[in-house]
Image (cartoon, rainbow, N blue to C red):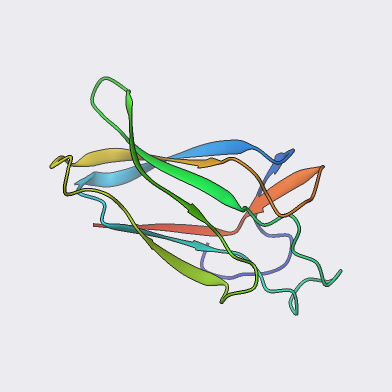
Amino acid sequence: QTELTPGQCWPFQGSQGHVVIKLPAPVWPTALTVQHISKAESPSGSVSSAPKDIAVSGLDDEGDAVLLGTFVYDIEREVLQLFPLKVREFRKAFQYIQVDVESNWGNPDFTCIYQVQVYG
């Protein structure tokens, strides 16, 4: 989705979850962006459902995960955040990217992902 409207996200129960993204073709992923709404856009003024600790993996042809990076989405920074991925040491392309949310910013009920983009 290109529009960021409060509540128009991919929500999942609890503070942990993952999503697998199928890319149109195999690519060498070099970076990933994550975007969430700002506190000012949130009706409650809180973004506790934003992802916090995130791990990104490429899935190889056998479905095995290759860790490409871990990072923290910081709710005090801009809403669109760019994270470089470790690809030089793997020298391979992936058609599937797995994004694992390992924690959020404190919401015990659900976590929302608004936008993820893969660059390569």
